[in-house]
Image 1 (tube, helix red, strand yellow):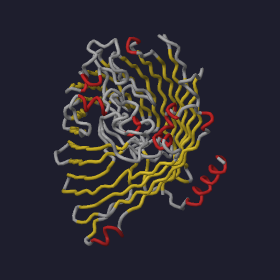
Image 2 (cartoon, helix red, strand yellow):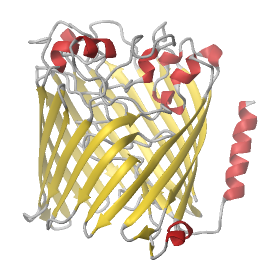
Image 3 (cartoon, one colour):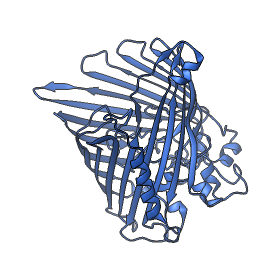
Image 4 (tube, one colour):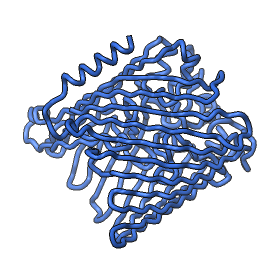
Length: 485
């Protein structure tokens, strides 16, 4: 049955292939979807629809996750999925326009070879685990975008469900359905050499959810009574703080539907210097600020850019409710197990020569509390973030050497985009973290004869060392195909 479905998917894809040489949209290596068609300005309501642009996408994802020594809590798995999306971006009428995006996914796996759906690793976002355990469905459909916007000169206002790309929030569309938010966003380039963004996000819809949910609340039996696995009804991201449950927040008199408020900016007024600032606030619970400086030094034929990032996390009551650990409440090894005040320092040196880039990075989460950023923006990104690595637990130091070839800003890789890295994570065993090495290789390329078709292969191997307890090393491999039309 699976082979038949795969063949039908390939046949369906081939029948839709057009003669176009350049796709009307593109995919960056981080999964961000770029629209390349010109958005027209019109002068009547009918043309708002007639002159709009459609963006179609067919995709296939395949995951093989294998442990060296599987056990009751760690099992190897092979999962595949097919999906599609249709996005409509209207024309502009007196500065107004709207966007609608419908996404769908169908997951395939042998349930006889997976003891528990909770053990699914990267493939979990190809279906809704909640729907599966409460009805057996392996399909997932959702509006990832449904918003209206208004542009005035260099400032844009967006209201509704949307993809929000900030330091702390990402669409992270690397599976089948993007991470989306319900709220209000303002983006502006009105200040010379600067960009500013403000976001008031009332709800989030993670990649494996059909419905929106709280931005910082973990579900439990009181938030969703009478169902299996109620924790999967709310924010169940892998980086979510498990102690901030509905019941715990209610008992502490804290809001269960607090918004995520973001303010960030970038400035390039000083020659060869880029300054970045980002902050978030979840009222009555938690806030964080990030500052980053990169200084580019140009030489004959190459450049060297040292960079520094600092993060400060402020506890507004969340620590007393959920604890300093994002996974285990009351976990020993923390200097103050009821405080979420935390800090991170990071440094890197990036060398660029032609289309090669070498990135030597270091991050240090100080020995205070874990960082809380469960909105698909990763605090160690660009420094020591590698595929699937959540290396922002307290007292974790990471070192990474990365080599990249073929990077560009268009999202169309006529020549292969190659990324490889070696990451060493020095974890704190008192916080149930184990030292490990992570080896990564990834390649992305648009097919030369048909640039609308792109493949993406990623492979990672994690080798645990100096174990405080037996932990199985594992392989994480992913193969993805995207056809844009």
